[in-house]
Structures are given as structure tokens and as C-alpha cells.
Amino acid sequence: MDAPLSTKPIRRVLRWQAIVTAGAAAVAWLWGGGHAALSAVLGGVVNLTSVVVYAVVLGISNPSSAGGTVAAMFRAEAGKILVIIAQLWLVLTTYRDVVPFAFFATFVITVLLFRLAFLDRD
Image 1 (cartoon, rainbow, N blue to C red):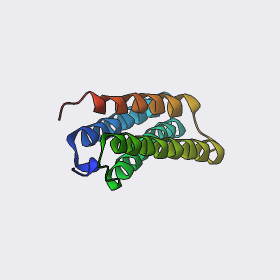
Image 2: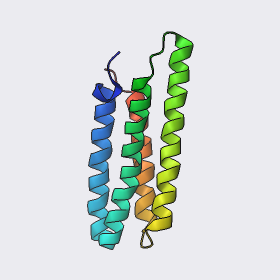
Image 3: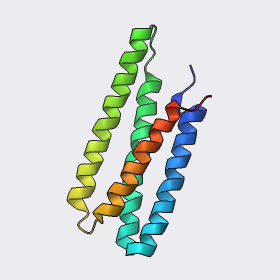
Image 4: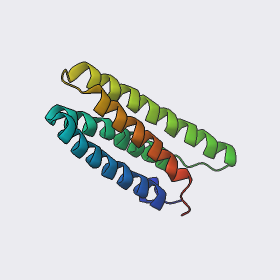
């Protein structure tokens, strides 16, 4: 089994998430200035790092059966969700000038982009 970060679907999703994050930051800069742009970047980074955690947790598991593969995917998804919750809490409690619309719009769009990995034929 290839390391998940080396697979085409994960790399493609990470690339698209990074592109969308940069585009959202540019639009947010024009719309609301520097704090809006930084909020958009942070919204995208939350999902970029969670996808990396997902891939790493999936990569360190070595399932030997179909049930083991499903369990590994559940562990990876649980790790991803925990990272998302922790980062959302961190951003919303420490960055006082966060622009919620820019932050959550980029966050939601990048969450939806992760689902494209399952549609990608490697």
C-alpha cells in the first residue's frame, strides 16, 4: 500500500484546497482587507492540516482485512475531526479580529473539496 500522502487523489485534493484557499484569501482581501484575507487562509488551513492528519493516521495503520481497513478509516476520520475541532476552537478563541464569513466560507468549501478524493479514479 502506498503512503496516503503520496497517492494522487490526496495530493490532488490538497492542491485544490490550497488553490481555493488562496483564491478565497484574494477575494476576501478585496472585500474586507487583511483580517478577512487572514481569516480565509485560516479557514482553509484548518482543512489542509486535517487532511494531512487523516492521511498520516491512515498511512501508519497496516490493516490485514476488510474490517481492519474500515477501522483504520474510522480512526483516520476521528483524528481529522478532532484536529478540526481543536483548530476551530483555537482560531475562534485567540484571533479576536476574525471575519466569520470569510473564515467559515473557506472552511466549508475546503471541507466539500475533500469529498472529491472519493470520486477521483487513481
